[in-house]
Amino acid sequence: MYQILFRTIVQGATSETLVPELQLHPSVKSKFKRCLDIVGSLVGLIILAIVFIPIAVAIKIDSPGPIFFIQERYGLHGKTFKIRKFRSMVMKAEELKNLVENEASGLFFKNKNDFRVTKVGRFLRSSSLDELPQFWNVLVGEMSLVGTRPPTADEVVNYNQRHWQRLNVKPGLTGEWQVSGRSQVKDFEAVVDLDLQYQKKWYPMYDILIIMRTIYVILTRVGAC
Image (cartoon, rainbow, N blue to C red; front, top):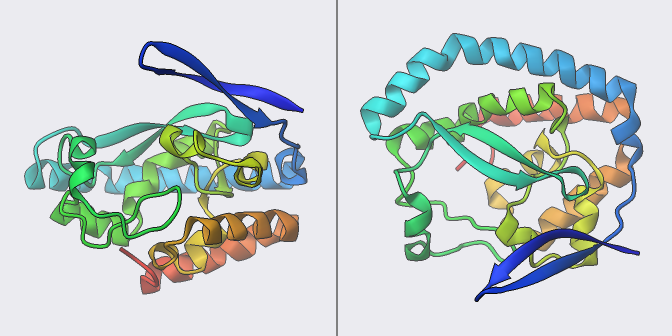
């Protein structure tokens, strides 16, 4: 069974992308996981409120432009939503993307020394502070504390049936990829393996283990950009 996820327009012609009908993972129905998400997101939003002003000022001083970077991502079963991060790149960074070498293989983009990243942005990324605004996505149910990395449109348009299985769970602020090397994992297929591994291993308390490992990774900056 297949379903239409989204339509793309190429040279004036409309094309439709068909994807496998995705299954509902047990984690999506878990009340424990949802309660954990609500509590964790509220804590995260309190932290955001405390550090918002100094981060906003630092971003403005370092680079002209907005405080937030806003982008459409694909979540559970291909449903789109908007994420907000503290801006860590220069303005019009997407227009400069073709000037940066992709050091990753597969359907995602990575470059350790991306010249588009600002000085403040590099610190925000290495400390994961740029992710704080996404706690709002967790609170409203678009994301979870733990899940898979939410892909962009230019990624999902090239997905095969195996890749679509990543979206059987809600996208997460953290997950197996983040605690298993983070930016050091540059093979997209390896990231997919980790996401599917999470789905196989998942049980309610497993999310707490991932969160604890994430805190350790952030504090020690293991695999940070």
